[in-house]
Image (tube, rainbow, N blue to C red; front, side):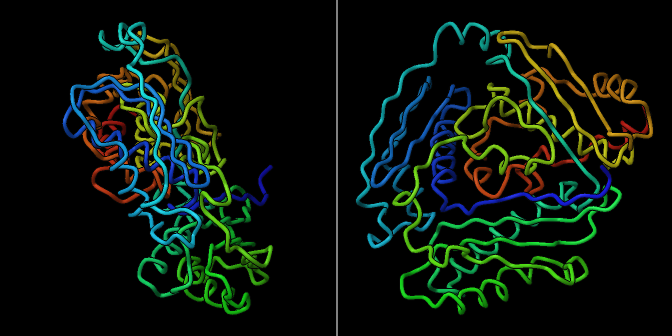
Length: 378
C-alpha cells in the first residue's frame, strides 16, 4: 500500500497517564542524583484525589516521595481545587519494596534486567527523522501547553490531547487532512471562541501552509465541552502511553514502557539505543526508513537477536546492514549506558511530548555521531 492516510496522537503533560509517567521519572531522577547505581522500577497510579506510588526500589539514598509528587503535580499546573485535583490536597500513598535479589544477580554481572524485545525507528520524512503524524501531534500539544503557561489563552487547564492525520502518496507525506484537539478549559467558555483560538494560536503556527490540505478539517473539543479533566475525569497509570512515547504507531512497540525505570532495564535503555542506531543509519543516507528489533534474555549481556529492516529503501541488503550495525554498535546494557551517558537525572523531561525526535542535548540517543563510521563501513 503506497497511498494511504495515517493518524497519530499526543497528549499534554496534564493528561493523567502522562502525569503518572512524570511522577515516576521525577522519583527516578531524585534517586539517580544521589545514587546513580540505584535500581528503580517505580509505578504511579492517579485517580480522583489520590496518588499511589508502588514498585521496587533499591538504593543508598533517601528521597521525599510525597514532596516529589506534590512538586511535580504543581509544576504541571494542578494548583486550583476547582480542577478537582490539586497538589496541596491530593493524598499520596506509597508501597515500595526492594528489587528482587534474583533479578539483581543478573544485573550485577552486567546482564539485562529482564527479557524482552525493543524497537527503534527513523524516517527521512521530517527534519527530526521521525514520522510526520506523531511529530506534528507532539508539536501541537507542546503549543497547547505553551499558550496555557504563557496565559495567551487564560481559560485553558492542563489536560489536553491532539491527533493529526497525514495523507501519504508513494510513502511520502503529501498533506495534513485532519487535526483533532481536545483542550481542557474553564467553565463558561464559548465553544466557537475556543475553536477560533485553538486554530489560530495552536494549530496554524504548527502545520506548515504548504502541508495543509485544501479541505483540511478541524475537530476542536468534538463533544462540545471539556471542563472536567485530569485525574478528576480519568485514571492515570505509568506506561499506558507507549505509542505516544515512541513513533505514534508508525512502527512497532516493545513489551515494556519507559518511565520509572532505571537504565539497567533494557525496556528503556535498549529502546533509546535502537532509536540512536536507526537515526544514524537514516542520517547517513543508507536508508530512507530504518527499523530495528533487538531482544534480550534476563541476566545475559549480549542480545539474543538483532534485526535491521529498511522496507526496500536501503542502499545495502538488510542482512548486510545488520552485520555492519552489529560490528559498530555495542548493544550490551553496560555499553548502552556508558555510550549514551544514561546514569544522569534526565528522565523527567522525557516523560511528556515523546522520548524521540526532541532537540535537547541530554537526549543523547538523538545524536548522529556514527554517520561517518557507518559510511566508511558501507
